[in-house]
Image (cartoon, rainbow, N blue to C red):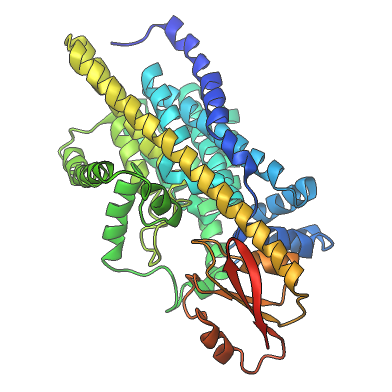
Length: 486
C-alpha cells in the first residue's frame, strides 16, 4: 500500500515533532559541566589560540589526522570560552540536525512516512549512543556523523534528481567527514551499497559509477595521509589487532546498539536501580536480540532480505568496520554512527510489519506491534533521562572537587596528588591540570588506566625521584580533605 503524493508532501510535519520532543528530552542535560577529555579540548584551545591557524589545525594535539576537528575545537573555544552551557546546547542542536537528516534520508529511501518517522524517533532517543551527546568532547562524533549524513543525502538526491549540484554536495560532505574523524572510512562503501542495492540495474547508465573515481581518489589520498600520520598506532602496541574479538565485537555491537550496554559505567549505575524482575527481562531480551543477528544474516544470504531493509542492515555492519578490530571495550561514543543504520533498519522493519498486518486485517496484532514499539521508545527516553541525570551529577561533582583541590593546596610544577574514595567514575586528572597546573600528576584509587598507581603506597614508590610534593587527599562526606603532604 503506497502513500499518495498529497500524503508524501505532508509528512514534513515530523521534523518539528522531532525537534520539540528532542528538546524536551534533553532539557535536563543543560545542567551538565565539563569532564575528562572536555578539559583536553579546552587545553588545546588555550595552548594554540596564539599560534598560526594552519599550524594549529595540523599539529593541535591530534594522534590522528583530524584537522577539521581541531578547527572546530578552536572555533568553539573562541565562541564559548570555558562556559559549559553553550557547548551542551551545541551538542543537542547537532544531534537534532543529525536526526533530521536521518528522517530525510529515510523519507527518500523508504518512501513511507511511518518508516521515516520511526527511524527518526528511534535515532533521536536511542539509548545506545548517549555518550556522543552527553559528553561535551564527543562533539567530534556528532560532526563526523553530520558530514556522513550530508554526503549520503546528497548522493541519494543526485541519484533521484541528477544534476551536478547534488554530487558536489555529496563530495563536500565526503571531504568534511574524512577531515573530521577516521570513522568516515565506511562512507564510500555505504554509498556503493546504496547504488548496488537501491538502484535497479536497468537504471544504471554507462557512466553510472563515475562518481566513484572521485570518491576513490579522495579515499586513497586520505589513507596515505592517515597511515603516515598515525603510524605509531600500527605497531605491536596498536589497539587494532586481528583475532576472534572481531566477531565478539560484532555480536556485542549488534546487541548493545538495540539496548543499554551494562559494561558502560553510567549505564551500570542506571541499571542498578531497576528491580530484579526487570533485570531478568532485560537479559532475556538481550539474548533474544543476539539471536536475531545470525537469523538476519541467513535471510540476507537467502535473498529474503531486499531493498532498503537489506541496505540499512549492511550499512549498520559497514559503519562498524573501523571498530570491530579494537582490542579495547566498546564505547557509547562509537555507537553513534552505526545507530543511524540500526534506526533505519528498525524503522523500515516496523513499517513493513505494520502495513503487512494492516493489509490482512490483523488489527489486534497491529495494536500489539504499536504497543511494543511505543514501550521500546519510552524505555529509551526513560533511560536517557536517567543517564542525563547521572552525567550532570558526575560533571558537577568533578568541578566541585577540583575547585576544592585548589582551596586545600597551591600546586606547583611536578607536584603529585593522590585521592582516595572518589565517587564512582569521577576522575579529576584533566580537570586539576586545566584549572590548577598542567604539569601535576593526579591519581586516585578508582583509576581505570593501566599501569597507574592505585594506592598511596604505589604512588610513593612511583614518584620516589620526583622533585614535587606528594599530596594525599580523601573524600569524606562529599568533601576533599588533605590527609598529608610529603
